[in-house]
Image (cartoon, rainbow, N blue to C red; front, side, top):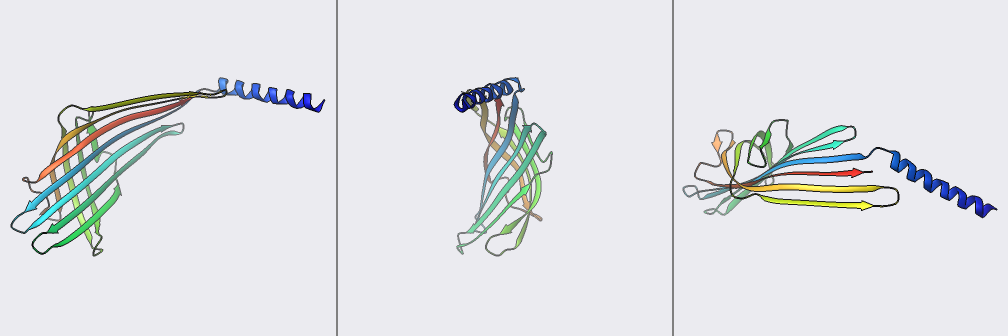
Length: 203
C-alpha cells in the first residue's frame, strides 16, 4: 500500500513540475558587448627611448529580469625602454568608465575613447597621470562569427545564441602624461573593434 502511495505521489510531483515549467513564461537573458583594443608604439632615436601603450576597453550591457546592468572598464599599460642605458619602466591602470567615454558606432565601423586616469609605476610606485583621446577607424573585411545551441529536457528547454563581428582598425589621436605627448604622430598605431550579442531563453 505504501509503495502504491509513494508511486502516486511521485507521478503527481512530476506532472506538477511539468505543468509549472510549461505554464511559466520564458525567461530571457541578453548580453551586448562593445570592445576596442589598441597597440601603440613609438621610438624616439634622439632619446633612445621606446614607448609602448596597450589599451583595452569594453562596455557590456546585461538585460536581466530586474533591468539592464552596465559594466564599463578600461585597462592601460605603459612601457618604456631606453636602449642606450638599458633602463625601463612599466605602469598600469584599470578603471571604470563613465557613460559616453567609450563610443562604438555602426557594426564595429569606428570608435572613440576619451578618458583621464592615473597609472601606477610598478617599479617605483609613483603615480603616472595619463589622458587618452583615441579614435578607431575600421578597414578591411569584418570577421564574423555566430553560434546557436538548444537543449531540451523533461522539465525545461533552453536555447542560446551568439553573433559577433570584429574588425582591424587604424588608431589615431593622442596619449599624454601632463604636458608630454607620449605618442607623436609618427608613431605606429593599430587595433581592433568588436561587437557581440548573445542571449539565452529558458522555457
